[in-house]
Length: 499
Image 1 (cartoon, rainbow, N blue to C red):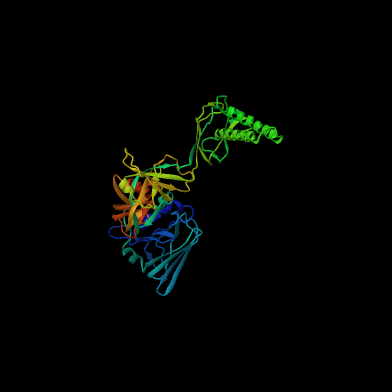
Image 2: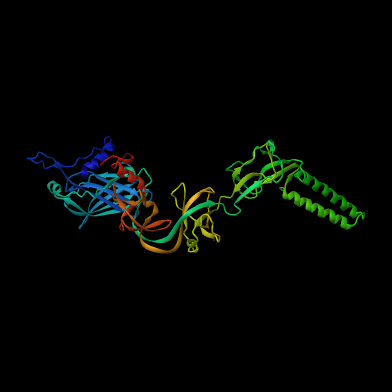
């Protein structure tokens, strides 16, 4: 019975403050000696603001017949209403007849009242919530108030649909969401394996341009992996060795030619040499400086070579140790600019030709079900890979913000044609149950049913459902796996208590 469920649910929290008003138990059968209880009604409503789940016993005029357990859930985050005032109006054909006010929820999400309505009849009941979380209004079009206990005892209980039990107390403590089943346009797509790769120029390797030593004292604060660097920042300081054609020799030659140019300038001014000699000296100095610039460009007074970051970004790799000798051409740092990434999808040549501009391409990474979006199509490879028999199709992903790691694998969903219209649900609503696509539909506030689906076209956001769901039903989009676990465990998953 509904009344027993309500009392069982509320009893643990009522002992200290409110005595549970038991249902009117009457009509003891003289022959059977059995006690009969008044039946009740279960109601579930959704609006844009809240979900109402209400359990109440049949109402008898002038009597307290039991508690109304009014569960209210915020549709924004599917968490319980934690504060606010609930006003309940019983409205008859002649106008407002009775008004009851509950000043606060008894506990998160649950308002409790035991109304006494003086006159029998059929009422429209309006429940108006005023809360810092949300304001909302629900209407029960026909609530009957019986003229006597005997009449209420004879009335049929409206229990609601059976199914998987998953209590509000369970829903409220996990990520949970339901979504009405609607018609949508679904883009025809294909899926394919993909990889997140750095854009051209967004990954650079800084190598030692000359052989040398990385002095420990001058490199103790060299940037580490994961550290951000700016363009032009010193990464490492090298003390070059005196090999032929090395930095020291190149710098010495520049300094010697600088002195030669200065000397030639004085002689030319004194008329001691021709202007051609001065021009030749200047030309030799320019060439020597160009050679020195090619080795790293900047010297800091002493014979040290400072290697600087060519781009701003994050240190993705570091292979040198302070105090160690490095060879010319040896990689020292890898820098990536992580603000933008490319998604490289491997597709058959025939499919790649159907892509067009591929607006709406989405992907998921190997370690997450979150759907990410690309910003635009960059290129379709013109050359077939002889091993995979595919061509690379590259998309840009903007504002990455460190979400991905270059080299990470992904699964891409790429639009290739027009759209189809029909019943469609968010992709996350569909579970794979041993190869069978299923979804869970909320039939009441705390009851769910499992539906086997026949699927149609799927894009990166929604999947067309050819059979298994009806318009207007509330399908679970977040928390479906927990509902499935509740069905396997008899409804006691997550520590809820039975009604």
